[in-house]
Amino acid sequence: MPELPEVETVARQLDPLAGRQLIRGVEILDPLLGFSEEERLRGRRISRVRRIGKEVVFQLEDPKGKAAELLLAVHLRMTGRLIYQGETDGSDRGDKYLRAVLELEQGKVRFHDMRRFGTMKLYESEAEAQPAGAEPLDRGFNAASIGELIRGSSMEIKVWLLRQDRICGIGNIYASEILHDCGIDPFRPASSLNDAELGLLAASTKKILRKAIKHCGTTFSDFQNANGEVGGYQKYLRVYQHSGEGCRHCGTEILRAVQAQRSTFWCPACQR
Ligand SMILES: [Zn+2]
Image 1 (tube, helix red, strand yellow):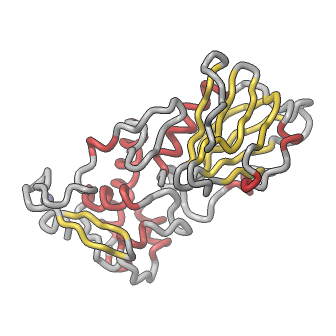
Image 2: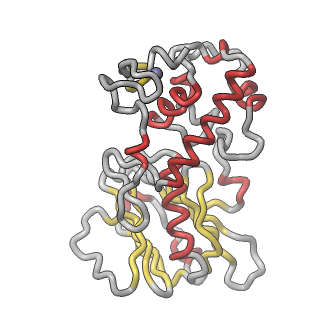
């Protein structure tokens, strides 16, 4: 499942390719998408492609420049991909997982999704597109804000980090990596973290997510970026899927356990 860095990667790659192009048409190939607002998209220009929460958002200008922007949001869920195809890149025929196509002036954006859990919808305003959870890369995301979100939660910190209604975009891979980076034991109750630890947690969250974005995300099952390539962050993972190996900091064996049905990887010596 793509986490924040993978979604950010797709948006950053699509922006220079699809940004500033006019939408000539929209083809919905999968009725399961339940999207029927093709007409509202036609003739609008993409001002920008960006990430909001865990969605890739196409900001669309009004053709007459009068009405407000419209936002087309794609959630990739498990296996969704948004791939830019230039005019000379061949046809879509034979791609049975193709669910929708945005036809642009000079190319196409193809929404390919094997398991069909991805979604496509319109937002009327940026406010409407905002997710419930806090944006971890916001300037204001710090020890105080994370402390406020955690307040009173007895949930184990690793499990808490996955709560999308608290912080948006941290999934199973980065939750383990973040906790290893700041030296916090994944089994600690969230509310047991002191101010210094909350500060370390906020800083590691930003550091790990930014580094993963820099390397275009992590590919585990079948994430591909907008150019149809895999991410490069897997070689920087310190604990995730490294159980049985020595910790890079201290050499202690990395352990694996299951918390809330998800694997957790950690170093019992570095993480307290
Ligand atoms: Zn260690």
